[in-house]
Length: 185
Image 1: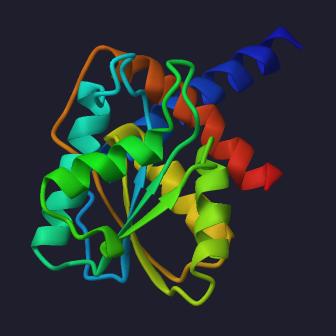
Image 2 (image 1 turned 30 degrees about the vertical axis):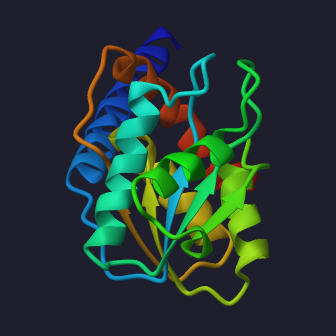
């Protein structure tokens, strides 16, 4: 009996490592393809209303994709943070300051989770067939899964060149988040 437990534990550990490597490679090697929309997933807005460094890196990546004309419009998605600001509103303000016309930005103030961002996107633009998801490298695999599950056919991704210590925690969390989405939704 103890031998089976060791084998299952060892196999589970190897599966975890293999999956983590896949998440890293998938996220870092993500390349945006020409699509209708870029969807930038929200993150922390500072108490003073400025974007956190992580979120600004995401929005800058979305802006880069837009200025290269790989997408026609940008969807910013996020919820009301504990700091008292709607993430999507602040992302839209930042993009407008950078020169993106307001009519090219769609705001989703109810994208509190990755899943809700995908669901809300499908509701906002039900006929969309292609999207570039923009988030941290560790989040890309789960983002693509969520958008696939709501019926988006062509999904590519992009992540900013922004790395921090928090990424270790994020990678650990994404393993479990991926399987929650795979099985639960």
